[in-house]
Length: 184
Image (cartoon, rainbow, N blue to C red; front, side, top):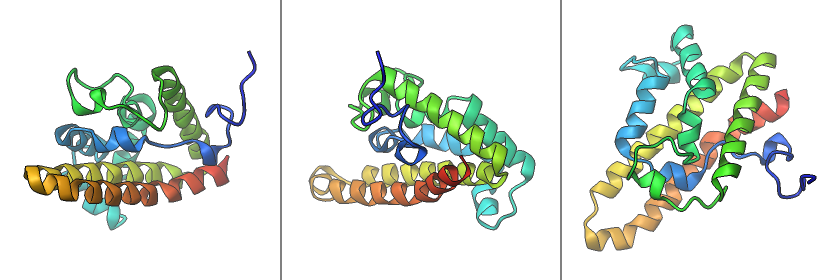
């Protein structure tokens, strides 16, 4: 059966391919996001700070990029069955890419796009690692903010916190999306 280029994310241009699923990201457990931060920084406790100051070791960037392409980091960003049983992200109703098969296909496509883009532009590796590091920082921050809310304040402020985090995630991945699109 031919693919419909209007609705099938595998046929769409790189600008239309999502690099994460917002609902999967924002329902991820804080400890899982912290683990991915450690993985992407190569275990350097000051990895995020060094990345911001443009002092992250090249081998740490390479290791982080390898974790994105060969590990399960991206699968978790799309809630593709790699999270522990019973975690929030596995139980989430993922809206951006609804079926498991489609989410898995999108993850493969994202990995392919990142690999192709990194072949033509070396800075893509660092940009991808930085984008996903920032996204996991946002997850940690959101979960900490939500943990501070009680029943009543959660009803009032949860939506505002989530909307702000979604906007931050969009901003975080916008440059990466543009760079990948320009290099492919």
